[in-house]
Length: 88
Image (cartoon, rainbow, N blue to C red; front, side, top):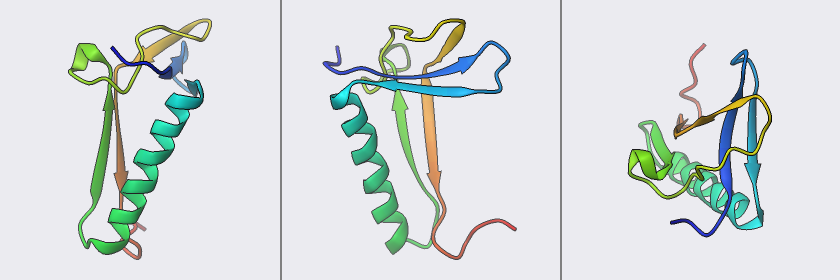
């Protein structure tokens, strides 16, 4: 079980994403994004970072919803495209 809070939650209309986190959870997210950015600067292929809740086999995301009228997202994948390789 994770000892931090980090959730990604969609609004009922699925048009708004809210990220909830305590200091430890936000540091985890920031570290993962920083690592991904650093890797993408030295690689020619896209890189990916995945965060998931225990129901998806991970321990990065929490299972306690924090928002009102939101749905938890259990798996988040962040794709980094190498500099200069963005889609038009």
